[in-house]
Image (cartoon, one colour):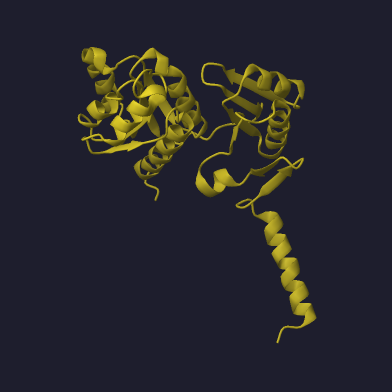
Length: 259
């Protein structure tokens, strides 16, 4: 039967373990957010702060807490107002980048370095209006240590434009190809019919009329007759960049002889 001393020793040991591990580290920020600062260690995915729907001041507070705790904060769906308030906090020894086209903000201490994994993520867009979503995916992939190659405006309206970029991605030995398309969303089906690597279809809301706001593109990708396609949500650049990078990083580990 356990004594009080045994229980006390167990409790002390548990507290030490809890303090030391970063796997389930959670930090509370002013009663507005719980930061999963151990997510990257646990899942290989960084915590990404969604700015959309949040008060800009709250986003700025969360960013400051995240940078101080982990050295980096990634914000998606941000505006210049979010950017202004984040910069106003003057986080010590940090730099802030704003990718206005995609709405991504990166805040990092200047000493922060991304560990390069060797993963290779290719990106194609059907049109130039799809670039913001592709850029969102590109930034996430690069923040997860992957190399990226991007080719814009290669959609099926001018199919001849596709073949050279696709050949270059295959020569580069891309681990996964993210294909971003709006309107009828046909490009991922075409690409998947030509390559032997996983394809992730990314429907965008750049469409109008019947099938408005990406509904037609999403439905077409889900109904694709080409095997080897996975599909994320409409305008899901963050999701596509995340899953694409997980695939690429695992492939890179095997190339390097690691399980």
